[in-house]
Length: 284
Image (cartoon, rainbow, N blue to C red):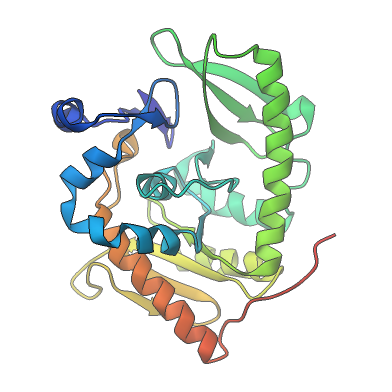
């Protein structure tokens, strides 16, 4: 069992466990203690995606998640796209409806002070041994997976590694915002106001000409997989559903894939039209 958005979930969904055990000949470390990722299971469950996997692997590298939970990071993992992005497998540990304003403040301040030794602590989470160590960071209220279980490493050594990792990923985020070479992604199972979203775009564009992809659930007006440009650096994308917080891997992968492919294509068009360009700012 793992955690996302403050709630537990199984890394292999109950309805898929029998299929996983029958088809998966190998497993690789995933998030949390004892979790797995299996390309055989993925291709068995979604065979229509296999011919596109390599290109989708590249497309997903053009995006970086800002929250509010692990769903987009798990989408990347499903395609074998592992990144060191700060918020990929993390959440700001406050009520969901308050997270947009918190991330706006944090980005505007460049997550200053993130990773200070006094603000980082480890907690084992789970009902059974070995439990996964979770990082709780008190400066910005971050909650992060470590992927390390009790007994795997001395807790104080792991804590030191996590402090160094937080500081490194903070620097990377600031550099990524300054270079504007990725499309930042915001999704939330609780509706976010457009005022907050526009403020989030402003906080990103303080560093460079960034694009924000605001993902929503499709409706009659906005079809599944569609993406539109809303001006001033904002893309609006639509997927069939969001995974529940209590089942973060219950993702509609084909829907997300189509939406990400369309968003990347639209970003390319905007670049050609001069609406968006790579920014080569130097971050000191």
